[in-house]
Length: 230
Ligand code: C5P
Image (cartoon, rainbow, N blue to C red; front, side):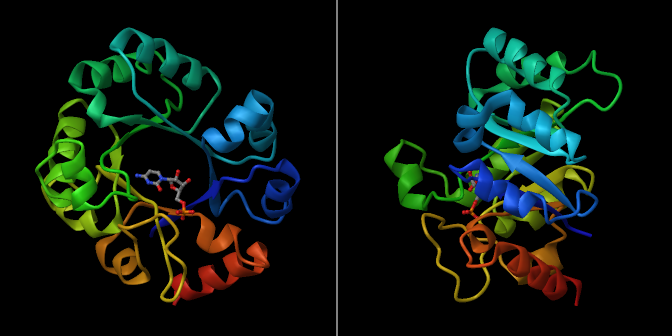
């Protein structure tokens, strides 16, 4: 069963807490990225932990191996449940990230590699000198992630099945950019749909603006749960 991660990309904590205070940590995990982490920092993470939420710290780390090693240790010290690094940082960087969490025997964070941002088109890839298609690039980067012992990857739902078929059901797929039919796409191009969730067995679905920008996010979330449970 796909688990749900709610993306807290609010620039105002009060608005975020209106939603957080009305959801069950047994059902939802929370994703904190640069928007809220830069503004509210460690204190905010601790508050979410006090409310028993698993926190995915989505900072998409990308740096030289030595810096990544220390950064990942700092993240693990916070008791974070899942963290992201860019696979484009390369094998040495990924191995440094992996070795940084080796000493955390009890509940080490899940180390998840970002493949291609879901806001990218094939043309965007070409514009930065990558001639592969999105699907090929996601596959290539996932292979590097797997070889470096990451726990899984972030990619759109479209790529989920090929990743699972090739790298095994235990290699986690985290898919953002979810949209219901008729939802506004905003900047997302590689969207994940209801059909993909049901057919392709995504491990973690990231829900963002399709819920958080709705008039009543709590009700939208309840309705969403009803829809996917059918
Ligand atoms: O609002 P929306 O549903 O587009 O939210 C997607 C969330 O997933 C954002 O928090 C964004 O930072 C994150 N994300 C993404 N694409 C990736 C990795 C993470 O959109 N490849």
